[in-house]
Length: 148
Image 1 (cartoon, one colour):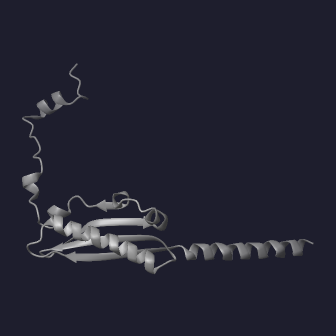
Image 2 (tube, rainbow, N blue to C red; image 1 turned 90 degrees about the vertical axis):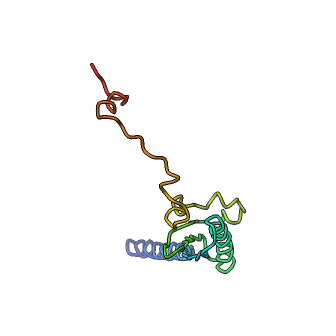
Image 3 (spheres, rainbow, N blue to C red; image 1 turned 120 degrees about the vertical axis):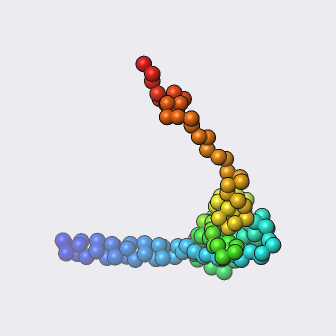
């Protein structure tokens, strides 16, 4: 009885392991990276709109062409004057894609792309840090400083 019982449990474990492997293997994440080249006179806003449109079309195409895909991850890189920088990134599950939510629900932007690609001067638009007159002034204005 003990050997038959062990063989039965062994068979059950083998079958359950096989079924778990099949279900894991059927779930597929597709990852793609694309580079969009900017024209010399193209603005950053135009490049970004082109990237958004390309990303949305790519996600639709991946889910349509790959019915076994459960998730699509796409990174759009922008190229301008020899610099290549990430612009957009999206990770979308099939269920979210089928709900037809707005792309802002699954789309991530890289905030420094415009500066890194050279479309905007970082010094002109970034706030300058305030310089302190002295170390003592810094301590007096610090809420954690006690002058007892």
